[in-house]
Length: 478
Image: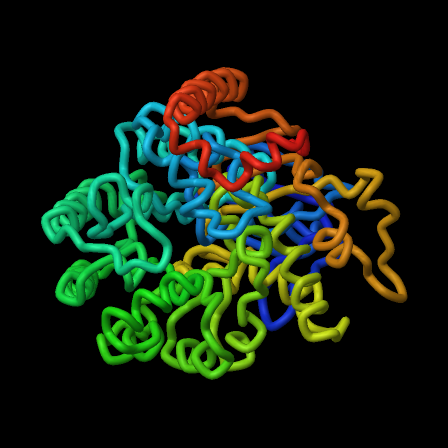
């Protein structure tokens, strides 16, 4: 008697990401029952083994694990494209907008960003922001996998909007404690929600944005609650300058003494880490979130991800924030990661396509602490997968011999628009390019209205005259 499957995907160019490579199976098939994968193998074997409620023919398509975006700030889609091509992007471009992003605007940005990422094949989103009403609920509604991180810092109300570059900014410990309490309340409410699709990490924003004692408090709470810590680490000369002035130490040494460097930590960016510091963090067991597009645009830096991986650490890819990166698309991050590292080292063999594809799937899953659940197509894992149309002109022709060209073309030629179907936890969220769980048009209209309202408030504030891009506006360059 045949075994039952809810979905049987057949005749695919299947990339399981099992083993050390990409786990290619020609004419491959995946059987899904409930939320999990129950079989992976050649189509002729699975098609006689399973009686499926639905059979999906993936001829001329690649099927691979859903992509993972390990570091996002989804509300900032509401200010897409206002903070690039400038120095001091946070203080001189983004901060004036931060003053005027209401909870409604933040949620509109999140909705836009989540749908954008989903349509480009991202099934797991590690989102980092101050919670607003409806934030977690939207991840639940859409059906994606959310690793949600409430932001924790002790900056005074208004953040960096009035801070002068080079000054040691003050801490508001009451604000820091309020943020810690809010994050823990959020974790109690949402960690493990939606049958485990929604999980929570704690997010001290950066080592320079909380007093030492509150950093230690967050670490204790994370250990007690079995939560990972998701934190910007060694990001920018601003942070290093603050750390040296406040503690007399660079960030990596400070965190090592504080007990932060272990497998509980997802360290984001590492733009200012030396090769030696990056290797030390990797050897500690911490994971790294690499945001090549964002950091390339806002800082002009290629972070030490190659050194981190050489030291044995897991590197995940993130898109960061659309205000300065302009898109939240892991296909984009794969290509930029490969290109930037090849250019940095003047070596075309550095960061080959198969490595960055693993960084977007199985390696990312390990870095964010979910390697036993997602990131590869294996029996018992969650059925998070995408179907990519290889008949798209930019992915054609498909060659299998003597060299198989599918992985290089996915990394160097795909835009994300070739994603045809998206499944998370055994449920299709997109079919034939159409979203099934959210009203895309309504989300876009609301985001436009909220973004325009934020922009009007910024324009009415004299501080906008100090924004770096105002010179380009005056010169007719934007």
